[in-house]
Amino acid sequence: MSDAMALAQERNQIFDDLFAGRIPKRVPVSVNLPIEFCIQYAGQDLADAQWNTEMLEEIFDKACQDFASDMLPVLAFRFPSFYKLLGAKNFVMSSSGFLQHPEVEGLAREDYDAFIASPFNCIMEKILPKLYTELDKDPVTKAMTLAKAFKAFHDEMGHAGMVYGKLIQKYGYTDVNLFAGFCEAPFDFVADQLRGFKGISIDVRRMPDKVEAAAEAATPLMIKMGVPPVPSKHASTFIPLHMAPYLREKDFAKLYWPTFKRLVEALAEAGYPSFLFAEQDWMRYLDYLEELPENTRIMFEYGDPKLAKEKIGKKHIISGFYPVSLLKTGTKQQCIDKAKELIDILAPGGKYLFNLDKSPVTLDSVNVENLQAVLEYVSTNANY
Amino acid sequence: MLDMQELTKAVGDLDEKKVLGLLNEFVASNPSPQDTAMVVSACQQGMAIVGDLFDAKEYFVGDLIFAGELLTSAIDILKPVMGGENTAKIGKMVLATVQGDLHDIGKNIFKSMSEAAGFEVYDLGIDAPASAFVEKVKEVNPEIVGMSGVLTLALDSMKNTVEALKEAGLRDGVKLIIGGNPVTEEACNMIGADAFTTNAAEGVKICQGWVK
Image (cartoon, rainbow over all chains, first blue to last red; front, top):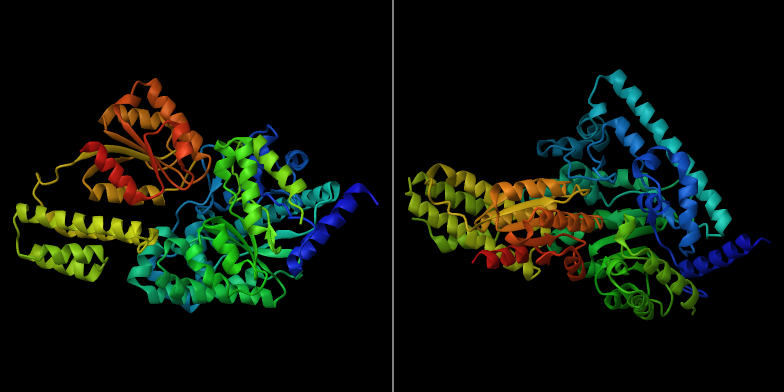
């Protein structure tokens, strides 16, 4: 057996233990280095490499060589080509070459009822043309544009998937894929793609009933989107959570939580665990998270790791909390000490996956040496 | 004459119906510009309560956004009865989301709260290059420059902006505040700003302290 295969076996065992609630041999390590970070790290041009995706294999390979992780550490979540073809307003490139989600309104306030009555038709007829300028055309042009964009989408994603497969083999990573599927909490979908942060914040006060009904209407679509064809414990549907920390608990309890809980439960029933990114601070909602199906995978940005471990650490698999900002400003020793501190809190009893509190978008978000030192430290020292 | 305390409380409670009801009634009574100035001030005090409730973690970002919207509606109602002179500003501020970053929700919250506190805000929008800050600072000579960002890449843009202000000889004439998800004390030192905050209400208080 090759070294890479032996390594993959060892790593798969660690993740099997992690997911089954057994204590693994050591703390599994993962890091998500986004495409932009990897391009810059490889010394390539952002504009070039995001379009000319033939360059990706070499770019990702370099990151795999230099950053210790048990799981494939690189990911291209989006590519500009298909958004550009669609004339997207919801994913736009900034002047420095970073694709971002600006504030958009896909659904006018007066169209709530249309969405609630028939969400799919409303998306096709009203929302897509508002979000994508090239879909605001005559039917023939629209059909051609959609066909081209989906071709581009499948080409890019298929190519990236092939590169991932090669790298997983080459470096003996686990086959665990936390990003195998994707969807949003229904309320977040209504907020991010339909009404915008500002719009939804106003609607929550002015027309909470419509917001509640819209989240309800979006739920079957999100379940459908999040359930993959082949269920596997080694895969997760990634659900990046957005709006909850910006709501009052009473609004969260009524408008956000019920449909979100139903979504995670439906995915679990279909044999598919969710991987949640709890953006910002979710400490107010730990008792809610406790209600989710056992072994939900949750990555936290901010908050109190002790409290999280205490409240949900026996039931769910926790990761995150490691401050990316420290990797930029701290000394190597401070960075390693922080990792030790988190491991001491979160590792006991298992159900802990080491990860940062967020993905470093750019190379200069972190001091690369600090990041490498921390990953190396956890990979070699966090034994049970 | 309307009950100022009741109005302040209604704004603090974000009770939109009540606030707009009170103001419409007030405007219908053909008030003097002096009375209107008092009403504006009562609304501003209500916004200060909103800021305090945010600090106390009773309100959250969504509530601040709604508060900004409520204040805009309130001022729109009051405009016809405002005199030209009662809009004395406490200071000028140039504000933007820095280069490379397209996020403006936090910046907009800070903007509306700063305006509510009496600042004249020059908003350069999003993805603003250092040169745009420099030009605007030259043009309007503000007391304060605010830089906002959500992505970690914003920190470097903030630093570049400070460097550009230095090169143009403008840095020492302004107070610099940075805000947004990635800012920390360490980042603030590295960037060379005078203050940082992840809390719009606190940011406004810092700025008020600077122009006292």
